[in-house]
Image 1 (tube, helix red, strand yellow):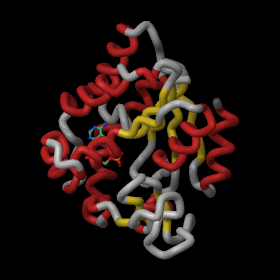
Image 2 (tube, helix red, strand yellow):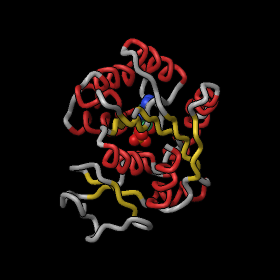
Image 3 (cartoon, helix red, strand yellow):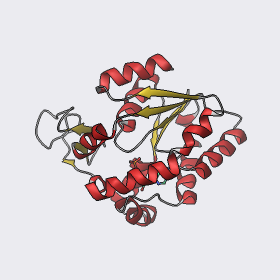
Amino acid sequence: MRLILLGPPGVGKGTQARKLAEKYCIPQISTGDMLRDAFQKGHELGLKARSYMDSGKLVPDDVVIGIVEERLRMNDCESGWILDGFPRTIQQAGALDVMLKNNKSDIDHVLSLEVREDEVVKRISGRRSCESCQNTFNIYFSVPKMDGVCDSCGGRLIQRSDDKEETVRERMRVYRENTEPLIRYYQDRGILKSVNANGGIGGVFDLICSRL
Ligand code: AMP
């Protein structure tokens, strides 16, 4: 199954993508995680991307398209994947279409996760992620057993530097301007399904599974 998750910052794409990856035994491909990982490892790509990420802007298309192209060529992508955070612009969507055409494959589903804005703010401000395994928690909804410690690997839980209020506002603006047009793009292709993502993690997951 080849699946794209669309939705504004804080809608829960990463959380749902991880659960879907586990259920369908296919990789979750998160461009945000890949860029953060490159930064943590001190790679040039990560260092370049950081200033865009910290100001809530999009990393240039050619950079992101390059890393996705490389990732989709890996063996574990043969039986499918879940793209989380890519594509984010019409140019990226076009580049993905070309990659898939060359590979004689296609997108099966695009899910647009939709959530109220007040809910988004709470999800983002409460979000904490493990600096070792990237697992995410929320101090309001998905509380770790021990304060500041990852339940899965014992790593330290941190708040993402781009989850500050000012940066979140910019990320929302960028989403509306650059990414929202993708809803229409995939609607016109007849592969878009909208999912009400206002509920809890388990409820939204069940809803997603029922749409696939
Ligand atoms: P995310 O973890 O998906 O919220 O992404 C965090 C940040 O990484 C975004 O605000 C962008 O700066 C950058 N980023 C992630 N994916 C992309 C993408 N597909 N295109 C451009 N920038 C991206």
